[in-house]
Image 1 (cartoon, protein in one colour):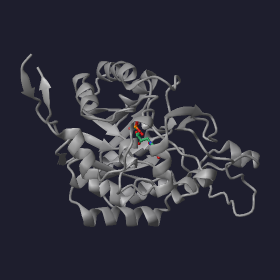
Image 2 (spheres, protein in one colour):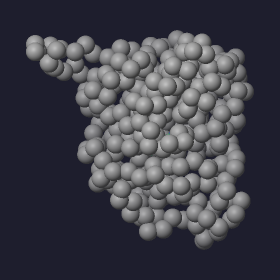
Image 3 (cartoon, helix red, strand yellow):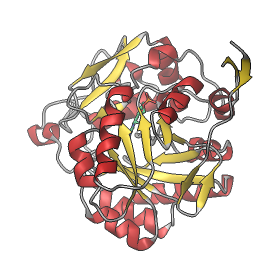
Length: 333
Ligand SMILES: Cc1cc2nc3c(=O)[nH]c(=O)nc-3n(C[C@H](O)[C@H](O)[C@H](O)COP(=O)(O)O)c2cc1C
């Protein structure tokens, strides 16, 4: 075999802007990916995403504006359709002319039509062939992010263990068969240069990473949450969420107890349109649980993570993540 050097990665167009690298930092709520992380990603040549869920409209406006002061690169917003304030947050994105909006955790046609009329690219996050059939025929969806069971946070696939390598080709084929021509992005369990290369070879237009960016200096997770991620030996699926979706959390998950609605100091912030826990008025509160972890109270918090968190052993600056992801490496060819 000869020694050779692999070419660096291709870019990715989002609306009128072109990112140097086809790497998206996935939106991470509650308050994990805010302006500092998203702008650092954009400055490194990638595409940054502010996690909008759990922010008030004024907070989101401020995050978008602060990101814009730090970078001319591409910064968008991730919104959960299941969020009670979804429409208000979408309005902010449109008024502030964010570079794109990625919508997951539920689906409706209207938001994409509204975005399209406003000239703002809309990405839809999906996890099944069934969703691909609907999405391919929706006006205003400029790109699709296919999130496998190896992703972090709430998970869409029926089989929560399905890998990106199994799910992505099925979903992409269906999108193309339905005539979809926009970028299709692979997400879930991708960590390094080889993963990115493999995803591109599989036909992905780009990749979206969450956990690797959560473990950076610019991520707004507390030091305690970052330490818990670094110490994690793996991940497990739990069905603790009142959204009806399963989620992926670290092993070991040290939480003794999650905050219960109705306890002193635990206030429902009405984060979800439909919350089985709020409606029963007795189970743990997802917003308070996620907020506790982000603030440093990991023992009473929910620590979401991607399926390969056990392989991430350091907290580094975003530009170091990019150095590792994009640098051409000497390989046997
Ligand atoms: C802590 C955490 C919070 C997340 N929050 C959201 C969210 O609010 N909305 C969303 O669409 N995806 C969310 N995700 C998923 C990421 O955006 C990303 O698609 C996914 O983590 C990719 O898998 P990886 O972590 O293995 O790279 C979250 C992931 C993590 C780890």
